[in-house]
Amino acid sequence: MRHKSDEPSHDQRLRLATNRQDTQPAEVEARYVCDSCGEEIVVPIDVTEGRHQDYVEDCPVCCNPMVLHVDIADDGEPLIRSEHE
Ligand SMILES: [Zn+2]
Image 1 (tube, protein in one colour):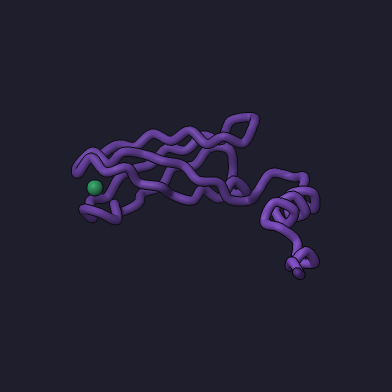
Image 2 (image 1 turned 90 degrees about the horizontal axis):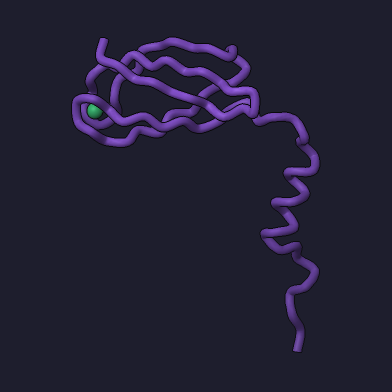
């Protein structure tokens, strides 16, 4: 009886990947709720763009433009506020 033990498990692969990169990821995910349709939208935030970012993004659900105000906290956690343009 032979098991496939020479292949690393998912756990090990994840740990290897995290060990190699001890800095913050360049991209994090933030969520906001669209004013128009009430859907929760997940947007990737490029943290290398700065600690505070303002930009306009069209809602992927209802296509209404939303102004997003993003603040990156000290621990890299993004805070996002959305408002109608
Ligand atoms: Zn929407």
